[in-house]
Image 1 (cartoon, helix red, strand yellow):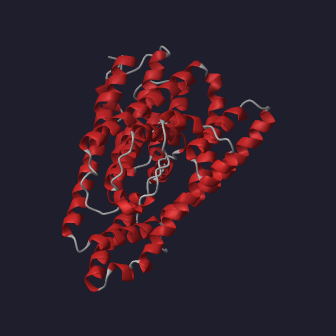
Image 2 (tube, rainbow, N blue to C red):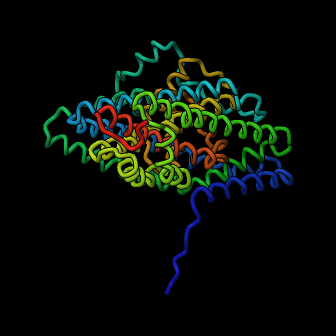
Image 3 (tube, rainbow, N blue to C red):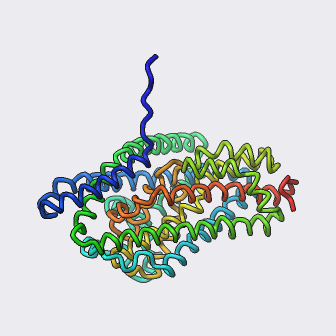
Amino acid sequence: MEKTKKKLALHWQILIGIGLGAVVGIVLCRFTPYETWSPYIKWAGDMVLRALKMIVIPLVFSSIALGVANMGDSASLGRIAGKTFAYYICTTLIAAAIGLTLVNTIKPGVGAQLNLTEEVSNLGTQGSIMDTIVNIIPANIFESLSTGHLLSIIFFAILFGFFITKVEVKQQTTLKDIFQAIYDVIMKITFFIIKLAPYGVFSIVCCVVGKQANDPAALASIAKSLGVFVLTIWAGLLIQFLVVLPTCVKTLAKCSPWKHMSKMSTMLLTAFSTCSSGAALPINIRDTQEKCGVSNKIASFTLPLGSTINMNGTALYECVTAIFIAQVYGINLPLSSQIIIVFTALLAAIGAAGIPMAGMVMLTIVLNVVGLPLEGIGLVLAVEQLCDMPRTMVNCYGDSCGAIIIAKSEGETLTVDD
């Protein structure tokens, strides 16, 4: 009987790419100048980054338009839908605000001696907050699509998705099928690009390390900055996981958050270990219904919806990472840009698929909006797995808390009542 070979998990491939890239960068710089060998390696990283840029606009437009159009179907649930969306939006904004506060207080990227400031492009958010708000409405959507003005594209996608629900049922079905097909194709392309990530990471890390290889202080500086960055992410996620969400369960649902957390332990461990809210969703639905007593009517609506649009942990991660990259590159982002990062992270969560590494794709969107260099992703990929595990767990726990709160607001009696 022929044995099937088990492929190495993607995160291990990326870690190997990071390790090899660092070693090769150091070795090459010992024998030849950086300028001599870097063009022969840098192209791979550039191609992966260009591929990520390539899918951003079609992914954003199709996923958000489709997501908003499908939300329209949920309008028949009326009151439950309104409560669910309000909860998801508020908790995601709170998570993003926590991340923003921590990263501006701790400043993990300040002082990193990487000499990367010359690679920074002009910020895409110059001007006042009012100018930014006005420019969200595109004068010409095709110009916005060609120039990559993502805030305008997101606005138009939301508008288009909403008005899909206002046409005849036959036309609704046709448009949703078209957008679903486009989204499915784009996701196939995204999966393919993500499979190439280890090669891109190898190239980026090799060039970053090789450029600094003759400066041990610079390498120590980036290691220290990444360590503080991970601690900042974990601190924010712990605040959301142990303070914000339990407080919501206690005050809004009048339930015991610790009893609820213990009943959801299997789901939490699954989310933490797999880094996939999609993999944890079946367990989340089962345990929320069977162990917590939430009705099928509410669990079957709030949890699948939450796994798609409720990204507490991911929003926090994207905000911290964007500001961290700006700090490393020596950019002082104004308040208007930071507010845009928060709301972009919230809107991007609508299209964030519940798959491993989806956070990297959505981070590309956030960086594009404020004009930060995508090369910065190469810096944080070294610790991506350490950040992905807890943020996925927080995402899934937030979904379950939402189901508990909505169920109690509808008068249901639960097994986690105080």
